[in-house]
Amino acid sequence: MDILAYGEDALTLWALQNRLCEFLNFFGDPSTPDKCIALFRPSFGRRGGDNRAEFGEFDFILLSQICIYLGESKWDGSSEKILNRHLDLRPEQQRRHDHFRFYIEEWNLGTYTSWADFEIQATPKRAQKGMNRPIAPSGSLLARNLETILRLIGGQYPKLPVIQDVLLYLHNGSSKPLPLTAGDNFKVFPVDYSGHVNQNFIKIKL
Image (cartoon, helix red, strand yellow):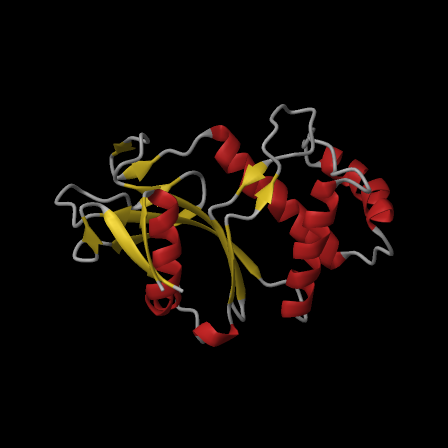
């Protein structure tokens, strides 16, 4: 079945389906697409505030054979400004990557018997890094979602891989200068979706 969809989320899914080989080549990643796992719009809670454990949702997370790509997507219809070919991300978007990177590194480098054990031992380590947001409390939906994905990551890699922050920049064949950098340490992968849309709708195959 063909699905016609509109907007940034639809373009992200289309890019994951149709531009994965180009993505891997761009990053010099020798992985084959059939060995990759893509998580589309994984959510870690929408409620905000520095005193809460939730930290939002990624547009995508891609697990290749050698790297974890933490992805934000922006299209040329986004409100973010490009200045001197740099796209500035909002602070909460930057922090999302920092928080999840901590979870990945701490979970995979530790030997935790349960999430409750992780919560107790990892809390002071977050404080040492200046992170005030609490660990997802044991038994919460957020903790279960995090543990599911962290165990998936642990099963994909024998040791902790490289973690790369990525901005997927989707544009309609723009003649304007594209961003070359984004956020603090994001690498920008540009995707031209022109020629694949019909009145701004993109076709996605199931």
